[in-house]
Length: 276
Image (cartoon, rainbow, N blue to C red; front, side):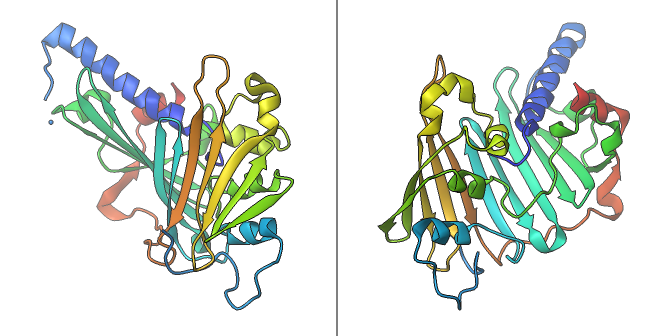
């Protein structure tokens, strides 16, 4: 449900490359294996809440006036976590993936401030894996012009990284269920940006793509806490839930540029990974 698709594919590609490198090393050298919303508000707390449930829900979506907050998205099996800092036009986005054969864990994080982009990869479970992949452990400053496809790297577009507002706007009506819970039916065919961000095969869904139910929760402070989209099964794909959570408004750390010894220019190996 991210603003820009392709990031999940990048995570998987790095893990696949690590697996391939390990397999090749094992053949040649016998390598073994080892190692709810808080403060802040989506709208002016002093203003009267709009009577229309859809307008109320849209007003709860994070905007550029919000303080830094945390978020998580679950797109099927891909889970992202991060921080959004609207004042700095900044975002941090991370994902952790475990590989079973050979057994290792990869944590990959992107940091974006305006047009500046950094990446950090942490590989654990097998000694020397960073050296095998020629990937440093520090933050790597990336040059976007060296990326074959910039959609493989995140950008800061707005304070709503999961495009929840775009989903809500496609609903004809939204129902207030009480206790901060709202329900509606999204039309995924009505917004090309939403289609791209969700990564859902709208064509495969057919007519069902026009009636995808969602549930949203707004906290007592007026912030959107969660939005769950119930995507039906299509073809060989099972039904799944796309879940977004926004939390820790005003408590999350501000997103700043890596500095000093914690950062270096990205080596050629980093671009080889990102460009596939």
